[in-house]
Length: 350
Image (cartoon, rainbow, N blue to C red):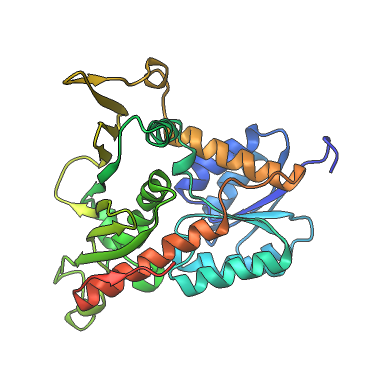
């Protein structure tokens, strides 16, 4: 492609992610052109098409994906639609950026990876956490041995119990494709896997909690309700332990997310970023001031994700995030649900 030619992008799913991230970032990118939107909500479509001056819109995904002008597709739909929509897009020779989790299970993710290779198309899971500047800073400290051997890390994403959360997700397993661990845990796992490289997770113990609401969930469907909270312990190949807690219905006023890594020489924390080292018998804060001046790490990481996707389409740039990265997350998720079901530690076979 010449420098003048733009990547012609279509987005399916016009929810919060598309409205706050993808549409604004694509509009800023001089190498991208938004040519079509797709969503089942006609009012939402009309509003966004008018606001961003997008030439075409579809309520039918099949019509959308057959649009001959589309070169690439961003899939920002509910979890259970990631797999069929990605497969369809690849079959129509479109490059794909798909939201996390890439699929609802490893079998689906494996098919997606296989087809992308066969078609020689980009399949970019939206695993943006490793693109965060604060996460990369911690990675550099770990890789340079400045925190010693990491032996324990923990993370969590605890969302306050809001009315929307229970009514739109609870007891809708087919729509959600899974509960808190799939929806929230899949995004946090990215940080743990990245900061633990080259070590790999070898086993997991998982516990799923379901808050049964008699007025909202019929008794006959309670046993199949998705979990609103999940807790897991992963064991890595170097005996490092990682614990994870996620929930979208905690009885608290505000959302709370964190990541803490503890080593033999120091520790690193996220949200906000803080790095401490033991020096001459004292604990010293060694967080670079430059990183503290930065704001909105997540938005910046998503901006970079969009940029690399466009550069891959227009310039053939190699993706820093591989489809296999998304597959590994799904393999861990599968092992979690198996462990939670059978109440035992389960090996993770990557």
